[in-house]
Image 1 (cartoon, rainbow, N blue to C red):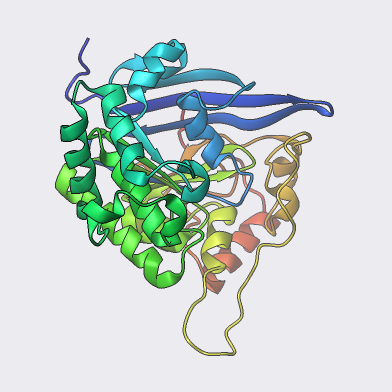
Image 2: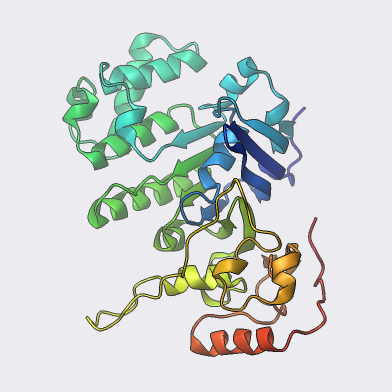
Length: 355
């Protein structure tokens, strides 16, 4: 059955992912909910181990041995209820992924053109000649020079940035409705990173492709996404529009990530790292998982996990924090207001807890 026009293209609800280990179950993702509309872009940001990549890999059935629950509806159909044969039809044609390291994603023993042709022919009835022409066209579109000749080269003959362009060409081969970019610029220098981000923005503009950008780099999020979900210890802790998140964050973790960004050009400017390290997902702290690292933690934070609540700022702004819902912003003034509120705890207003 076709999805309704106003229905989200991708609707993920209460996604939970765990892995069995000899030390006990690892709760990698703990109740993630988000939506991506047609042609919209969502950034998922957080430190390493926050569950960003696991969330998207789980919905595509790419995690061997994982226990996955919840729902992930793509065009109205739940991906988590699909058989492997059905999921294979969605991967590439409906949802395509560009991974962090293209050298491990591309087969080292096959020419890049052949690999793109195989993707096309696995999902369509296009003959080899037409598929080859399409592969060359895609390589040209993503900026590979001399694409007809380069299609016959092996992955090791390309630079890191060019390999990433090949991966993007492969992802676009079947005109997917959603492109998931999983840390696509991490291993690239800043000049090549800017080129890849510009290419991703061009894809959105020209193909009206929905985008899910996974990264630990808030600078990347600023460049390419409209909405942002911040994750910590396997959970979403804040949702907001891009602008709201950067200028009016509510959660102390989000504010800390923003204050970690380099500002200005003076050699005397120092970064403000968040103290401590993320918790082990084998033993997540009681209450708010961030409270051991939070300068504004109250007694309530140590015993009760905060729900996502509507907070001040832009429409749809939600935060999982017990601080008053009007305490938004970055900088010393905002920090002072949070500290004052933490010293004088007030009765908690749930602010309209979500889900």
